[in-house]
Length: 174
Image (cartoon, rainbow, N blue to C red):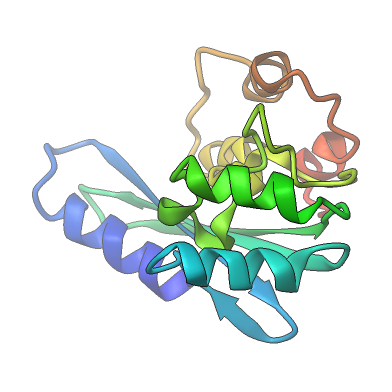
């Protein structure tokens, strides 16, 4: 996963203008040691959602920042434990029929307004969506880049989630 993020960032940096910093990410959903990619069809989506129902799995996102002019590299990785709720077969069927799970690793989107598959979350919500912004802010700081926006506050306001871990992430403790 980190290797893929690095490869993506380096590939883009080779074609970037001088002075540009390229950021790439790679997100993985894992359950009991198995990587759950994007389902190939509705049947595979159903199988994944049944496996995850009422259980906790992990979402990992690796970030890689590459500075084009000198190849400087910063990497980071975010891990979030995701407890799924006991959604009904009917809810799951309606969600699968929407087509939404077919382009999602693990066959779900945490932010889906109709399905809401996650019971509660005590970690980085943005990571489960695919881009942990506090980890990005921390990585940018290591590259001596200061964003024009307060990423942690913008993230929480945008997704309407009070993040319990952002201070620890920014302090390098998580």
